[in-house]
Image (cartoon, rainbow, N blue to C red):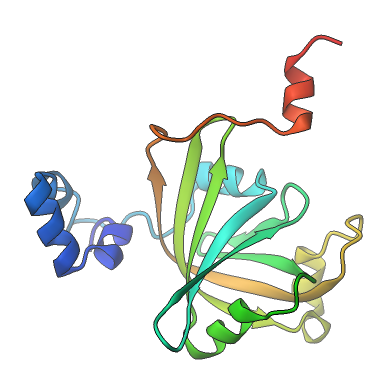
Amino acid sequence: MGHRFLEIAGTPAVHAAQAEHGSRQAYARMEGGVPRNDRLGDDEIAFIAGRDGMVMATVSETGWPYVQHRGGPPGFMKVLDERTIGFADYRGNKQYLSVGNLRADDRVALLLIDPAQRRRLKLLGRAESVDLAEAPALASRLVDSAYGAKVERGFRIRIEAFDWNCPQHITPRFTLEEFAAMTPA
């Protein structure tokens, strides 16, 4: 097994591109061996808990990727166990593209970014849309009653793999709250 993210993302075409550009040997050394990057650890759990948004990609029945921002109050994504995360999905533009895509293909890619700290976490998983009225125990873990937005459903995602990206091209950005904490009163 080995680095689970590289196993999933490392197709023959990716390996060929790595070979052409001189990085194949470095990535080949990470493959094989003890399984890793398939279960969330303390760093990933803390990072997920601090996010107020993320980008979720699904795949349509025609093979096109669809990317959508999902958000809520900081901590809206909950780690349910070392292989599962979930979040309450709030009413938006009512296109339901992600919801529809997941009916045909449950694969998702999530991108979580902390621009202030120049960190990003990529997650690959299998998602399901959950009617929270029919899953009260899950609803109690996902829904933030202090957040006034209308909850339409929950998403539960079984993590298949994750990877941390390098910070090289992340431009530092700060929320108003982060900026206020850095400036004298």
